[in-house]
Amino acid sequence: SSGINAEWPLRPGGQYKLAVPLCLNYLCPPVVTFIGLGAVSAAVMSSTDSSILGVSCMFTRNVFQRVFHPAASDKQMMWALRITIIFNTTIAMIIAITVKSVYGLYLICSDLVFVLLFPHLVLVVHFPHLVNRYGMVVGFSTALLLRALSGEPVLGYDAVLKFPNYSEGVEGVDNGVGHQKFPFRMVCMLVHLFLAIGVSYLTNYLYKEGYLTDELDVLKEFKEKKEDTKTNKDLVIENTYPVLELKKQATNGHTNGSSNGHGNGLHTNGNC
Image 1 (cartoon, helix red, strand yellow):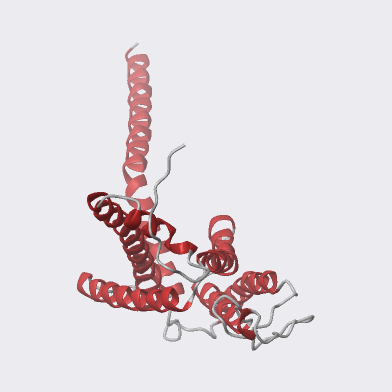
Image 2: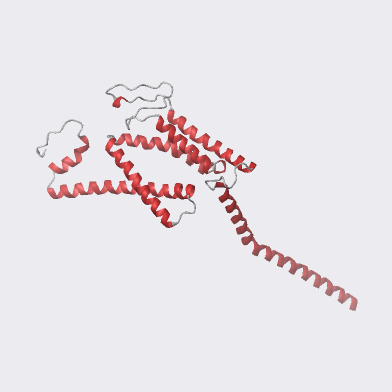
């Protein structure tokens, strides 16, 4: 067997995250070290900027334009995208500095997907007739608030909203942050789901009864539905107009042909 001897710097425990950089630095030639560290840095930066750009584009398109400013111009969309990128980058930088566990970040992402995105996906794909913008916004905001108040040991802050069987934090363990033993994530998700349906039904009822007027429709939910319905009717009329005209002409032609044939027959019989 063969091995390589290297003088490793004195490192305290818990430096396993630096295994790859240390191997490249002390066990490889300088050229390989330079290329290897550059490749690792490029891969990390590529994944990070694509994620930030994707999140910012989705927020600008699906939230800023769809919900708050449907008539936004391209210039306004561009500025909204730039501001969103700066905001998301700042939040990501703070989280990267404060959070010490990549696995913890993965748990937070899975948590937020289940609580915030899963109800939206189910309702939009399978039950779009039961929800509208008001229900979605209220359900999403309420679920996000409940989840934030439930505490997060990975981020190092204790719960404000403590569910039954809450375990208080112990000094020196997880920064003294307690843990929720109750299935609070399921509760937040169900609150999101039923609140979105309930608020949507309530706003539809208020609009039908005349309590929610077009002036109070701040999210332009019902106004756009009216315009879409009118546009669809116009399209149906335009698309069916040639067909109706052809049918009408065919019917008139058949009637005229029958009348002419009947008239000619009477004239012939009269001559006989």
